[in-house]
Amino acid sequence: MVKRIFLILLRIGVSVVLLLFLFNKVDKKSLIEIVKNANKPLLLAALGIYFLSYILCLFRWEMLLKALKIHLPLKRVIISYAGAHFFNLFLPSTIGGDLMRSIDLAVHTKRPKEIIATVFLDRLSGYIALAFLALLSLGIGWKLLIQDKSVLLSVGIITAVLIAVLLVLFNGFLYSKVNQLLHSPNAGKIRELIKSLHQEIHYFKHHKGVIINNLILSLIIQAISPLTFFVLSLSMGLKVNIIYFFIFLPIIGAITLLPISIGGLGLRDATTIYFLAKAGVSHDFSFAMSLLIFCFILVIGAAGGLVYVLTVRHRRVQYHKAPSIQPAHQK
Image (tube, rainbow, N blue to C red; front, side, top):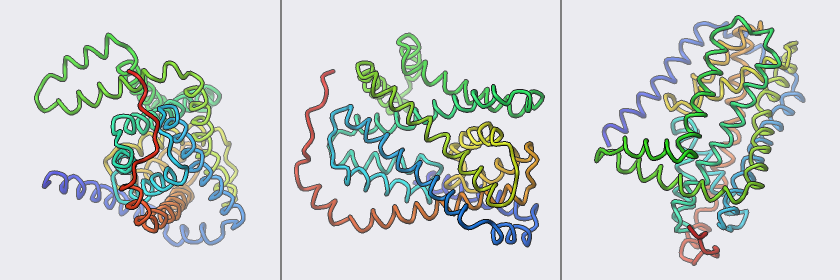
């Protein structure tokens, strides 16, 4: 318990230190003016585009739930998903929200292994699309960044991590080797989790259509973030080649996933400033865009929290009823 509190305080500290450092590096008056003078219709358009990614993510997760024969009313999935984004505001990276929606539906359905598998696959498909988009964009904009080692290294690490995870989960030989390495008593839970994920993921081998549709949807979702930043840059009167956003945003997104800050706050801003500087965007404008994205996250997360809180009584009533769920698949 003490260790968990320490880690949370450490992540809060990382976010605070990064934000204080960044605020000292930018012109605060200029930052306020940039946001104040931004084109309001384009700002609203950017918010609408960004919100679209949340809607598509919801349907991507529901697609996986149905594939495992977990048939829940759409309203119930929305509640769980909305609550996850609310908790993301306070918990480290997106891991906290994923944990909350896993627990929420696991308690409701009494099928924790399958629920965790869908959440993991939902996140994995997004990461696959993120890495693919980064590689594709880098290929298109190769001449722009051929000498930038930091960008090449970042994309290389993202791709290497993805390949390693996929090999462990889908390659029987490597999976058995990892299981052998996790022989210590403390690794028991991790070993069981990997075993469960391995079993549930292999069920999807017989549902290739679901996997293909899921990955297509993930690519569209990952393309929304660069598009949102591009519209934000237009609202501020900037003229930046859109390919830069498609190269840098997957890298920024991957780094922000690291559970070393609270909700990616500070880490997202620092990486946005660092990478967009390579496209000629000043620190003030980059920081303004990053803060506006955080405002979007706050608005959507707060709305999710409102949905989650207002349905507490509804969920309690549901909990005492036997959920109408089809039997689990044969293993």
